[in-house]
Length: 312
Image 1 (cartoon, rainbow, N blue to C red):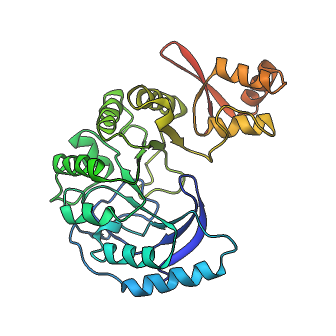
Image 2: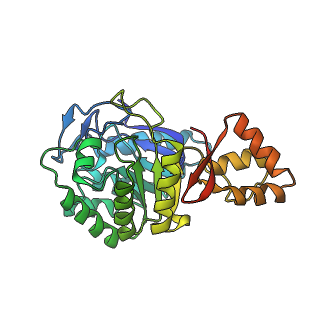
């Protein structure tokens, strides 16, 4: 088994060298949308899986072959990375040997534990999963281990957000008919506003999910969620994770490609799109009508405003 892989392009992290510190599939959740499939070893017990020195050796071997160093070394395994009791030792070894930033993507479920919060303090960037607000939706979408308590997890997340000095981001996966209800979205956004992440990402499944019936949120639901998040967190702190990042309302280079890049990350009010295209020297009306006919974008109405969003 390869304990390190990549580097691979990441929409959140740039070029990322991945570390697979958990075998498939030890996890505290069995999320309905997981690209790795259902959890075979549902667990909340921390244990040792691999020798930290072996992980370091594989990372160094890959780094030696890289033309350019990655932006991050990222713990993104085939399970929940904080189940690894050697996490702090692995992070310490990597920090001692390499002057590269460390990131970790966790489902947040073990943050009620002080030892887990202490381990995560060694990272430069921590991504927390927050898919639900209500108990019912949490159990439906994340299918947690039976001994986990949502209120305790929330307390742990809040504690960590106050203690952590690095970059904190969150990810919310939207599943049609599961967590796209307005009250659920408002609850999630309200909770996120209490921990004040540097960026709150709204995502949809882009790979085959664990359950075949799982469908991504619609464009309308994405725009609605984006606007609710933006209202509570600030527009600069919210992004859609449905495509690669583009320039921020500056249509540099090919203005049409630049517009599509922006729309895959940020829904844009149609008036702003008109202004941006006009500044780029092309006809806003003709361009938008062409993209609508080609099925590249969709026009969505929300709270009396019209938005353009990249068609899924």
